[in-house]
Image (cartoon, rainbow, N blue to C red):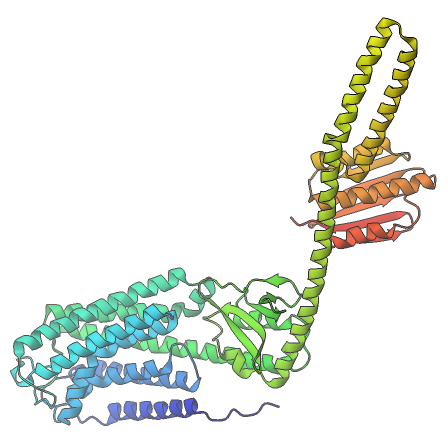
Length: 583
C-alpha cells in the first residue's frame, strides 16, 4: 500500500508559484483595458499579433506550472513561469493610462527575457561554468536595463515606443545616454541569442545518443528561440522600433512562434518525465515482491531506454562495486552520465550509473519505500556473496598460473643448467673414449663406454623429468604440436581426430595437456586399445573430448580445471572438459 506523500515546503512553494503564474496570465489576458489611440504594443497593432502574443505567454505559464507540479523537472518550471511573465512585460510597459510605476518596472525587466532562455539551457547543460555565464548575463543586462529606464524620458522619444506617458522610474533625462544604453541592450540580445544557438550545437555534439534523442525537440526549439531573439536585436540596431514597421511585426511573430514552440516541447518533456516517474513508482512496488536478482537493472533499462544503465552494489571496505552477478564493475561515468546512490538509512545499498537526461537523480530515490530498499539490500548481500566467489575463483586461478609459471622456470633452469652440463660431460667422455681407442687402452675404453652410457641415461631421465614438470614444446608451439609429441611417446595409441590450431592462454593449454596426459597414463595402466582426442574452440570455450579413457579422473585434474573456471564431465569412457578461454 502506497502512502500519500506529505506536503513539503518545496511543494507548497511550487503551488504558490503556480497560483501566481495563473493569476498573472489571466490578468494579462483580461485585465488590460482596450487599446489607446497610440499604438504602443504589437497586440494593439494587429489582431494576429494580439492572439499569438497571448497564446505565447499563456503557453509559457502553463508549461512552467505543469513542470512545477511535476516536481523537479527539466527544464525547471520556475524559469518557464518567469519567461511567461516577462513575455507580457512589454504589454504592461505599453499600457497607456496604466500605473506609471508598473509600466516603468515592466520596461526595466522586459530585456531580461533572453537571459531566462540562457538559464533554461544552463539547467539542461549543468555545470558551474553554465551557471556563472547565466549569472553574468543577468547582471550585465539587468544593469543596462536599469540604467536605460533611469535616463530614458518617454516624452523625448519621437516614436512613442513603448510609451508616451511619464515614467515613474525616471531619475534624470539623458537622451544621448539612453540611446547608447538601448544600443548596448540590442547588442547584448544578439550576443545572447547567438550564444544560445552555439551552446545548443555544443550540447548536441557532446551529449550521448540517448540524450540527443530525449532532448532534441526542446534543444531545437531553444535554437530557434535564440535565433529569433538575435534577429530582433539586429533589427533594433538597424531601425527604430515600431509596431507599424513590417520588419518588427515579422520579428515579433517569429519570436512568439519560437517561444510557443519552446513551451510545447517543454510540456512534452515534462510529460515524458512524469511517465518515467510513474513507471519507476510501479517498479518500486515490484521490488517489494522479492524480485529476481538483476531484475532492477533490466527493468530500468526498459523503462528509461538507457541500454548502458548499470546497477552496482558496494562490497567490502575497499570501495569496490560489483554488478548483481558479482562481477567487478567500474563506477566511472562518461559524457552526460552520472551516478546516483540509493540509500537505506545512512548506508548506500546500490549505485545507479545512468544517463542524466532520462533519469533525474532524485527520481528513483524518492519512490523507493522501506520494503523496496530492503529488497535492494538483500540483492546487495547476494551480489557480495557472488563477488567473494569470484575473488576465490580468481585467487585459485592466480595460484594455478603461478604454479605453472614456476614449472616453466624450473624446466628452463633444468634445460639451461643441468641438461647442458650433462651434454658437455657426454661430449668430454666421447672425446676421451676416442683418445683411448686410438691409443689401444682397452680397459679405459670399456670404462668410458660405461660412463657414456650412464651419462646418456641420466640425460634421458633429466629430459623426462623436465618434460613431466612442463613440456617445453607446449610453450613454444601450442597444444596441437604438444599433443602430437605426446602421441609419439604414448604407450597407448593416441589418435588426434580434431585439434584446433589456435593458441590459448598458457594455463589453459597446460590444463588441457594435463587432462590428455593423465588419460594416456590411465589407459596404459588398464591396457586400453586407443584414445581419441578432439580439441575444439566454441563460443570462447575450449572443449576437450577424450574417448576411450577408463577409470575416474583424479581430483587434481578436477582442481586444476575448476581453478580456471572450467568443468570436467565423465560419461562412461568419455571425458569432456570445458575451459573458458575468452576471445
